Image (cartoon, rainbow, N blue to C red; front, side, top):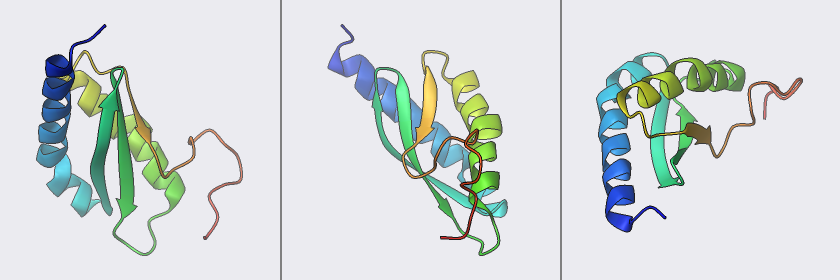
Length: 97
């Protein structure tokens, strides 16, 4: 079992990396908020800051860039999940709300 100190450290490191990435994300029309880290999985909320940025683009950015950057900087992180975006592999969900 992972102790709470290690989990707190992992959460702190993920939050710091997200803060470091924030200016780049803002320029591409997104914002990322850390919800929590459990069992090595960071759960985040993705907010689109530009009206024409699609949920598909946000989901692909999450899978392709954000998760890769976080896992590259923090090897013990197993995955990154967006609590408010369906997986990018689902067909047909990229529709206006």
